[in-house]
Length: 385
Image (cartoon, rainbow, N blue to C red; front, side, top):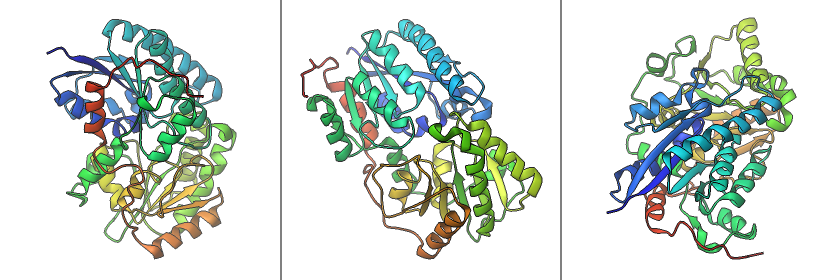
């Protein structure tokens, strides 16, 4: 039996949870051969060295692609994209895959899609057709136009991809693989590990028995010069909420230094006693931590996607998730400590929400693997404008 060589590119810690169950299903099929490329911040200690988690889960890495330029600004982000394009082209030339899978909307994602498209390698894009704030939407839609197969999370996303001119025969509503992990976690949802012992981090060991908050706040690329000011508002609000706070380090988008410096300054000057900071966690451990939280605070898509399925209340701050389809669990506020605190308090009173399958039903990974095995990879493009 001939095998299709499926090359999955993971460039950042969130990308892994967004594709893990599909990778697992690809690996388990006799008609597919998984090639795994790990690149960008997924290789870096500063962002939690996600590659270690990937390898600990039993996946073999076919190639590593260092591509991140330091700077935390717009220039370094653009140059990192260019460097990724150069290095990924070399890797793809060596691996010679039949199809390349790229995830979501990061600048490394568009580098992957450009390299593959110019090398005449079919591109399968996961999570296209969604609407958000910042530059992410531009990148996502650009990758859609470079892609040959579209594995989208919802019917609304599928409709958007078709309206962009893509052939309906290439658009498949699979759901999001990250929801698969959330569904699996619900079979054993208890926080059965000590996060401080297993993942270290910075800050005091906290008593989580009476509830806690999880904060994930990333810089907004189009507002990068405000990153420090914005995170300071969130720090004050989370501190004022009076619960233990488990805070995850920001990603590497432009403005990351402002966000990181704001956190360090607050920690060193005010020495908050209820904060603990983590870089990264294995996806399943992270989901258990999220599920046990009284509320998630910040601007991560986790609040929109996984938290909707898990029914976890989420306070979404600012414009980073503007336009995304929302569940009842999400409350939008501005970068204002009073609004953020009010949102937290309101959610603490509301409690958990019902499960929302807006982004999937928990079976996306096997669907994606089956499609990669059976769908023609070079469907003749029809003009659909």
